[in-house]
View 1 (tube, rainbow, N blue to C red):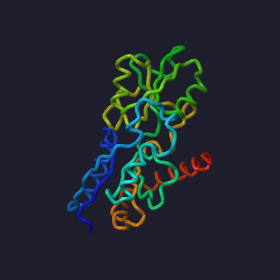
View 2: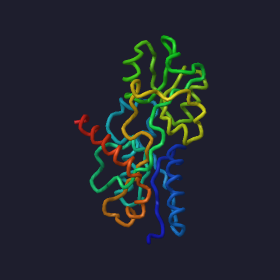
View 3: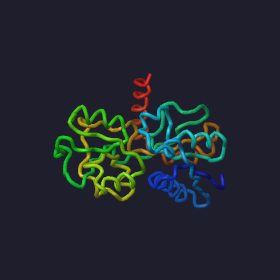
View 4: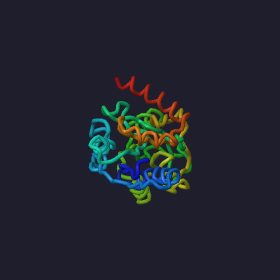
Length: 239
């Protein structure tokens, strides 16, 4: 059996939580296996003063990690599945998808208990064009502004009074111990979550059969089936 494995990960607290979770699962399953984390900075991490939709392109949070994977600098990569493009680079594959955590988008506010309580002109922060479009379709009176940075940075900006509310993935908040900040989870008839939201994805080289076999136990069949269907649909509508 392989003696050591290197996991590629982004440097944010949430990405490190996710990668350390996979690391702990591997170490528990294979006590003799040495597992290391390799922190990698992606394009999405570097550009923080421009809305994601304006940066353009796909794989803003995965491309550099996938490059290291293809160049054999790392053995596997751990991603938030919602960040992954529907088409992977040639030579890479989605080896496992973990059991899904909370799927929805969370409404977080220090002033209001519910989304419906927001007054006209309230300032709402989000980095997601998907969320912006859906929320404005229901509440065109709101002032929805771009909000970049990691989870703690976004919560800090809320606490500084720069926003009346922010919308974040419920799974990420819960994983980082901020579940108590969630006022409510937005219903799907208000805001449909991102494809793959709440699940972790483990990406490997197709030719690395040994590592792929080691990771098989991490795959949650029901979640994989559901997210494969979601990603197939997204692939069609993307053209």
